[in-house]
Image 1 (cartoon, rainbow, N blue to C red):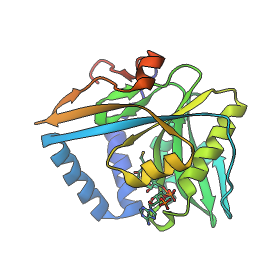
Image 2: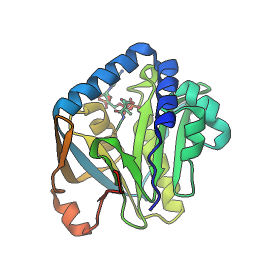
Image 3: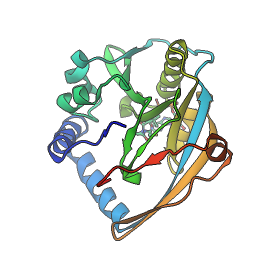
Image 4: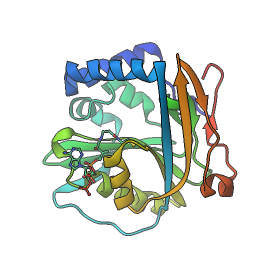
Length: 228
Ligand SMILES: CC(C)(COP(=O)(O)OP(=O)(O)OC[C@H]1O[C@@H](n2cnc3c(N)ncnc32)[C@H](O)[C@@H]1OP(=O)(O)O)[C@@H](O)C(=O)NCCC(=O)NCCS
């Protein structure tokens, strides 16, 4: 299984890119949120699934396409969740990025993997079952939210993946993220299982997966690597 974690220098580059795209205030907020989160927090991730095959619902003026290495500078400027260099480094045969162009700009981006995605909250890799894909790091620019770009992207991505022969698409959403819950539901996803994790003074405790989907699949979703 590939280790998709980034090293400390790459993480620093990501932060700088984020500050450039979204302002220094965003970084201050993020840092204080992470500090509080480490001291004491409890979160639940809901894991949703849908068949890859399904209908498409166009949004006027929006076009989804697979992002390539040449999009790195644009990605850093328009989306800002990665520096150009780390964007390129993360693209692989099993991990790709899709962008939604709207008015000549990438207004939304979403990553998918068929192998594993590093999930900071769980300090582990999240791994979809073989033959399926997992959606992660979805982001719509604040000036384009509420226009249906995320559900549009999800439906288009599912269509693309069905053509490639993938069976199902999964996505995990924090229980306290109503916009994301709303968007994945609009895109036809249904809850499969959930997992709760707690942090106390930096010590992470991950509970067992709960729900019908976890049992049906009998699949090891959360995979720790040495040092993970
Ligand atoms: C979650 C997110 C990707 C949704 O993207 P989107 O393209 O705005 O999706 P939608 O247009 O379908 O909006 C989803 C819901 O957000 C809410 N919303 C609408 N306008 C909004 C705004 N300006 N700001 C925030 N939320 C808004 C609405 O409830 C909307 O659903 P509804 O219009 O059907 O009631 C986006 O809010 C985002 O990037 N958030 C920060 C990163 C994040 O949470 N990513 C998801 C990780 S799983």
